Structures are given as C-alpha cells and as structure tokens.
Amino acid sequence: MPSRPSQKQKITFSLPASLIERLRNAVYWTGNRPLAGLVEEALEALVTEMEEVNREVFPPRLSPLKAGRRQGKRASGDRAIGIQ
Image (cartoon, rainbow, N blue to C red; front, side, top):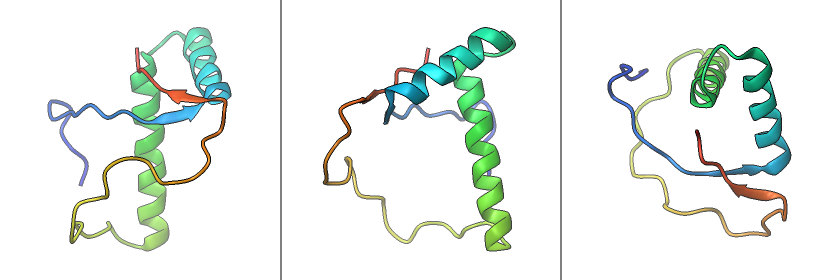
C-alpha cells in the first residue's frame, strides 16, 4: 500500500558511485524535479512492477527486516547516498 506524501520516512543506503553520478546528471539535465523525487518515482515503478509480476500486492511482513547491511565484500566505489 503506497503511503501518502505526508507520511515520509528517511532511509539511508549505499549505491555505486557511478549510479549516483548518473542520477545527479539525469536530474541536472532534466531540471524538473529534485533527486529524491526521481528516486521515489523509480522505486514506486519498480515495486508496482514487482507486484504485477506477483499478481498481487505483497502481504505485510511477518517479522521486521534485519537491521544493517548484509555481510560480504563491499564494492570500493560504493558510498552512502545523501539525497539532496
């Protein structure tokens, strides 16, 4: 269930530096929305597509997600995204 615009929460995650630069370039050259808006639209489209493939909205979680990042080698080009 999509949240209403006033019900926003802040999250922090890492993305490859090259993807962050591509996002910033896309925002710069299109100039019609903030970076956070572009990311929000992309994630909304992705989750909607996943639900369509699943043929229904995913049910609520049975337990909380595990905190922190998964164990494994972190790519040297990754860095935390600060949505500005």
